[in-house]
Length: 171
Image (cartoon, rainbow, N blue to C red):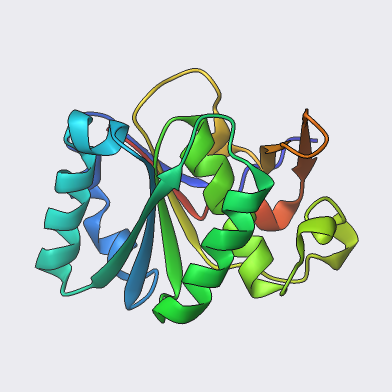
């Protein structure tokens, strides 16, 4: 069986083509990026331009590092809780998008650091728009997230149907 619930908009000007779909995700976006990549590529500016045109406010969380740490996910979930955002946009390579999946789940299910890999505790998540700026991981179209546990010095992943992005924009 093959199951892929992600709407994928692919091609030149895909971001512009998907603006109406993004506009239906919610009223305030939580933008997740790495420290520099989304800015340097111009993707962050492109996304915020579309959000402005749609009248959607946003909050930026740009603290995601390569191989996202579980601590950054929990911190991101706390920032999300205070933000008033009702959907997420992950912009970048696999790390920001994987972190966005985990942050949405941690926030929506009030998960602690110890709960992040206990998928039976996942009951809901926020809608996620995945906007990859690199190719390779395919995380924009999967239900998997890989995080780094710095305390134990190991990488681990989880998979859940609730982690699928609602929309992938591959421009």
